[in-house]
Structure formats: C-alpha cells, structure tokens
Length: 344
Ligand code: SF4
Image (cartoon, rainbow, N blue to C red; front, side, top):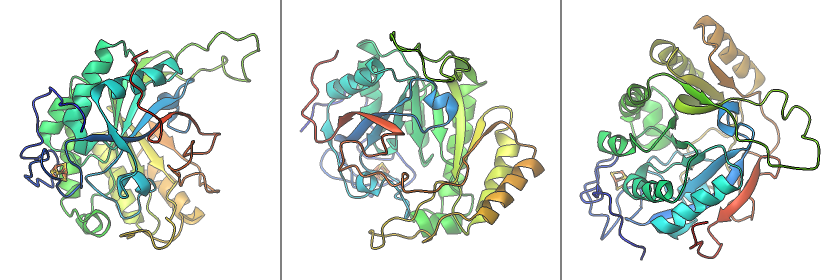
C-alpha cells in the first residue's frame, strides 16, 4: 500500500471519467480495473514525439499503468490492459520526474493517466515543490470528465489529447464507448479554453561537451511548446471517413488555437492479443495520400504528420530495459527498478 494523496479525492465515488462507475476505489476498482494506487510502468527520454514536444533534449515520458478507455488496438497493451507496472507514491513520482529533468528532458510527458488524475495532481505538486521546472504535458485519450480536467488546469502546461473518432459506432467497436465523440469533443474544447494561445520557449541547452555538437544540433534548434494544445489523431486503416471528420472538426475548432498531429503509426498487435478489435493491417500509401489531400482541402498547415512508417519500432515491449528502439528512447526508470526514494 502506498501513501495517501492529500488532494481532495475524486476516487469515491469514482466519476473521474465518462464511464462514471461510482465505485469506491479505496476498496475496489471500476471498469478501468484500477484502485486508488498510482502505478507506473516506465520513464524515458523520448525523441520520437512532435518536434516542439521532443525539442532538443527529448520529452520526459512517464507511462502510467492502466487506462480508462481500453482501445482494442492499443500498442501499449502490456501496460494499458495487462497491468504491467507497479505502485509508486508521490515521493517516488517526484523523484522520477526530477530524474527526467536532470537527464535533459524538455518536459514531463504523462501518458494515459486519466484514471489516476487525483494521485498525479498531488504527485505533481510534490515534484514542483522539489524543483521541477520544465513544462508538464498531459497526453491522453480525451475521455475525461470535467472534475478531472479542473484538477489538471493549474498543473498542466501543454495538452496532447487524442481525438480518436467522431463516430460513435467506432467508439463502440474499438473502445466500448459509443459516447466517446461527445465527451472527447467537450474535453478538448475545455482544454482549448484553458490554454488560450500557443506559447513557446527555447529548447534546453546542450550539456557542455568537448565534442562538436552533432550536425544541425545548433543550427536550427526547434522551439518547444511551453503552453497550448496539440490535437493528435491516429489514422486507423480502413476508417478514413473518421479521419476526414476529425480534420474537418479541427478546421472549425482548432485551427489558429492548436496544432494538429496526424499519426500513421497504426501497427496491428500480435494476433491473439486480448480483446483485439483493430484492423489487422497497416495504413497503405493510397490512404495516406487521400488524407494529405484533405489537409489541403480544409486549409490546414499548422501541425505535423508522420510519413508512412515501416519497421517494427512502434510496438514497444515494456519487459525490456528500453521498451522502444534505442534510436527513439533513452530509459531513465522502469517498473522493475528498486524504489527511487531520494529526490535529487
Ligand atoms: S476512472 Fe475508472 S473507476 Fe473511475 S469512472 Fe473511469 S473507468 Fe470508472
């Protein structure tokens, strides 16, 4: 059992997300399968995020165990569905965040923590008090309730919500959440209201080194997002109408206020994965080119898109010391490590 979190608890009855289970998470779990314990799986410096997220130093990603949405094609299913990870208390969370900052992270990027907002809010307060200075990013599926978002408001600098679909039938098929579109839209509009205009900062300085910097490292260091919203959308093979709806939605609600990030990294999970409801193939080039045409049709040029991907880098394995390829990620902490008790 880990320590109590002092933030007024929203765990009993738990109405943190639109599932609205109403359970007491001090004595049990709701549909997400999570109790009041905050569990983490991995923390690493990640260079594969959008340029203003990775910056020069890399993004300090913290992967939270569990998920309140449960996509039937989740690439992180080992931690989101299978429960890989272990409980941490606020002190260890703060130590992990500060270790990432000390390793040169541009920001702290909290991945899929919607079911653990009260614990994370409290842990962030502890990390800030202990010297965390870099921006905090909230990287989620946007399936979040108003109370959870209100708790994050003064603690999060940059929101990275997914807008997965606006089609309730796909919400039912992939997440068993036909109400996903209405709740995700409401959550993202609220994030946009919280943030106002995009704000930028310089990337972290390069550490002193007798070696010359790598090519391009100083020539054009990317500016890093200090405040704002990046709306992400993973293109699901065979579901392009859904992607067109999302692009059109962004053109009405996000353009000029946020950045759009289109991701092509959909990768089928190993066959036989539990409750797998996703397509069994990757995006094909013809689909990719149609989506690029829509960006032009809707006049969207403020954002990012991935090139069509090859290779297997996009299925992490959280059993390994480095869950991702070494080209993308540098591990700082993982769930098998001993307790990181000292705040540096
Ligand atoms: S966070 Fe979990 S327990 Fe709480 S309402 Fe959502 S699914 Fe239910």
